[in-house]
Amino acid sequence: MRSRRTAIVATLLLGSLALAGCTTDTGKKPSSGSSSKSQPQTAAKGTSPLENPDGTKPGLAPVSSEADRKAGRDLIAKVKTADAGPRTGYDRDQFGPAWTDNVDGVPMGHNSCSTRDDMLARDGQKLEHKDGSQCVVTGMTIWDPYTGKTVDWSKQQASKIQIDHVMPLSYDWQQGASQWEKGKRVQIANDPLNLIPADGSQNASKGDSGPASWLPANTEVHCSYAIRWAQVSLKYQLPVTPADKKTMLSLCGG
Image (cartoon, rainbow, N blue to C red; front, top):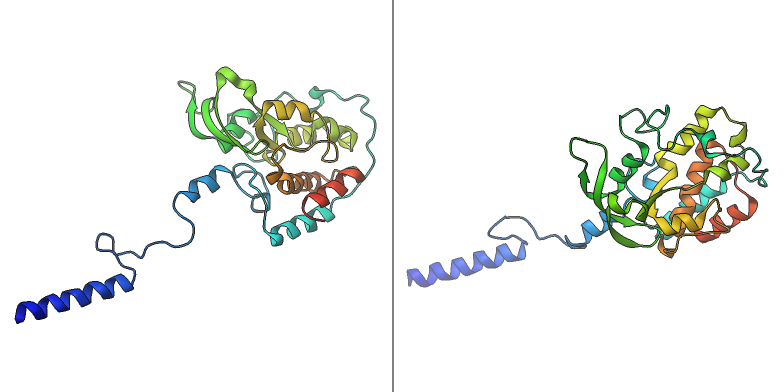
């Protein structure tokens, strides 16, 4: 009789533990909502530009909620417009040596690593470095926001992933950077906010185009791309063309 009562008590106890969501090995309640597998996928796609106002966090994640799209439109609405000026006098050297670490006033400047390696390290995963170097990235896995694909990259195929200037330097020049002191031009050329590692062919096809003329192949990041343009425009007080602003607003549902 005693053994039967003991069995009944044990059964009731196990049932109450199950109802409480407990487990016998961890004592923790099982997680609900997104599975553990979804978290690395979200992280691999980087960060929403709305949560990354200085560009120091990885990547360019899609913006999908209506609240975030509205926040994007509100930000883009603050951007000023102006027709493009002449390209006369533009030269890449006007923006300093490519990927120089010798830049003041932007995150990651003067950290002893080139801007290019800083961007690969910011957005890449499973990083491999050159022997004896903490800077030079020789291999990685990266989610490319412009194509929506995950890429296994190595330095032997360096052009497969290129660093895109979100607001192209020639575009900057025509919108007012031609009147800046050179130090400010070096800033915008090496500012993480204005830089996205992306598919080389996408970067090449973009050239110096604004959003009205060119957009990433991956439609999921179109609103994010427009928001990032607005962030750079506002930080450096550079206007965009009226056609580009109209496109940027439409990309976030405006």
